[in-house]
Image (cartoon, rainbow, N blue to C red):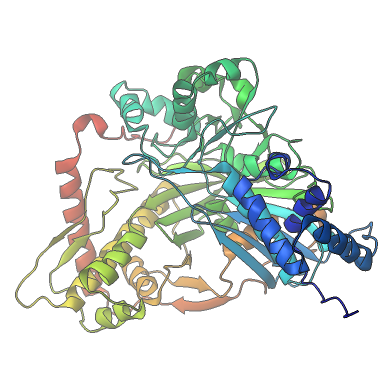
Length: 586
């Protein structure tokens, strides 16, 4: 008889699915038990059969049991070699593993789809969020040549404000996840300003009411999904942002929790009392029974159970994605600033143990909470980063390489009098005008492609610089530098920001500061990294962009852009939609 062909290693999820297949269970029953879709079950079965070389259930059962017997008994104790970070974002789910030296040793990712059922509506499948996140965790472990028992602890970082409601008993969502960028609650948000209640909400939460907030989304689901309010009143619904959903599933529906950084983004969290606010719950008509318990960002959040992992891995850190980036970029002291260049430019400044209310329409938020001690931050977002770069490359010039923009930018010494307002998706901080649109002015017959590119990138950099400037004024602290991360933190934009801000811009060598921030936070609970100053050599600076010796041209361009931006905003904003500015500290 010919020897059997050696089979490839099965992932944890494939093993879990095969276990149920071999027990004779239907694929529908397996999907319900594991909390994944029927299609995902079929894909795992197909891959497992291919790896085993099986063509029937009986053959798969024989080969699977033989493989498990060859592996031998599972170890009972953790070897505690690595930290695992789950990074669940809007466009992809990722899992990253770091060793004792802080080195990234494994990364796995899968794209996540989204739906736009109507203009301005953005939704995602909660089961896909969970299935892809569990899948990449198993892939990261396998790609590193490790086992789940090698994981010392798990940290989670996630897209914030995205809102999910599910049945407490079945664990099934009652509606798709409403994504943070969804605009369906715009009318309710505008009514808050028209009624004069926006400032009252802001004093409690530190947030300018916007459609980002989870509170508007929760109320919408309760009002529009049949029987949702009845189920909520009976205590049968759970609300959570993505972190809560992942912990709920990782622990086998044992824990319904969130951390302070995510809670502070819901518009239901009292930033001074550090708890859910009863008056806000009554105002939004949201029952307290559906809310998760708020915990410190670092602590014991329970342990994972199968099918996520056969090992009981402790979950010891949770942090919103931008806060995790702030931590990963070492912004630990008041006045330290980071900006993440992705879909938008999310800029945050650490302000210390007491919240500072912004006089410039910025958000005041919890950066993280460790051992019951919070650290606060100011935040502002520029919306149109990726869309501006994409418009330049694909629509205006049909450039195939991102570096082509750098060459065009360097081809001219200034913008030639051209000004560009990057507002393809509206204006974010500090003006908060979603109706604004991008505009271009100052064109002449001598305008070249280089002038257009320089005007666009300077305009984008000026918006970020203005947010940093207003943060510094609010906090009364001048930052020593600005720290960048993100897929769009390219050389030209980094240098533009340095020139306009007159501050050094640091771009870090570690390309994964967000995941590293989550891993470091989780590591503090178990003492994985012994040093109290963990970043000394784990996140080295890749490059420092110093301000150019002569800022005159850039400064003039920035002033021109600001004047144009303010003028357009005044013209396009309806009076009832203007934020009620704070006249002094609260």
